[in-house]
Length: 77
Image (cartoon, rainbow, N blue to C red; front, side):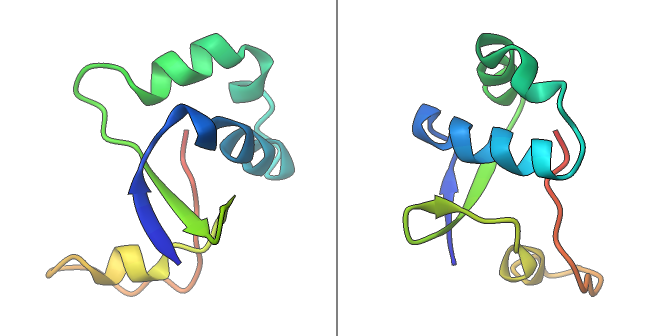
């Protein structure tokens, strides 16, 4: 898994994950979704497995000194 700062090319994969999780509102308006992910003060990181956006982000959580153990993953739009 590779963590990258969000780029517009990640939007399709992020929207697909959101829809798979039952969160259709982010993908309803792609312009708004991109604006949300790049709004001032927002830091959006995409977890990539090769070129594909993935929903497994455990290494990201472990990268923080005071992390709690998370057994899963999640993208919270």
